[in-house]
Image (spheres, rainbow, N blue to C red):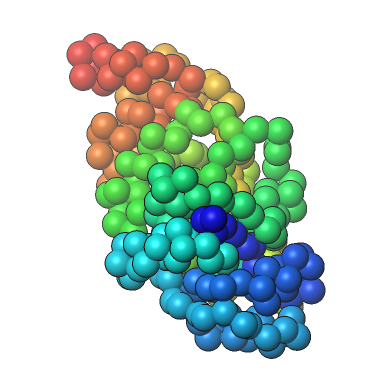
Length: 278
């Protein structure tokens, strides 16, 4: 018989949020693959259990090399439990590569549902939750980040992002430029931890708040676009809006996409106004 791959969610803050099955699965696992073995040891101590199986590290730097050995262990009948530092494996964390390989090998994959920063931030944000999308981490380079956000300018679902604390202000500035200063958002910091903080405001105000520095794990929630809201659609206004974004350093292609999203117009229409009619 082949083994089972178990994706085990871990607490994003309070260890008391760990599901009871997490302790059971860790204690019974033949192999525990952990993003950080030191954090795993602390978690095991907090849960009051002992590991009977072997522990291996499985993180971004070694997952390609380590995946075949874990699949081999699964094929030999072992129960492999995968944990990351916090939340669900493979959600902006290591895991997808192993899941894909296990599925390809015909191995059963299951999960221990656990806390998720994505859903927790969405729930406490105060923003619409009926439709949403998760965008993970934005690119680190400013140009790539601006292009990614320009592509999202006309996204009408609430958007959830992860961000590093030292890049939070830059991310909020790029969101302000792409989505508009008055777009409602929430920055959720240190969720469920002692210093939990949720700042709800428009993007312009959140940029000012972040100027003093941001610490801890950060999740940003931004409300979706309202078609046509806040942008006049006459040619002069469209050209002016594109020019204003270009002055911030945004490339014209991204500026056109952003303005089109805010105005609820096809990108080709704004392109026509800027490049041909103008």
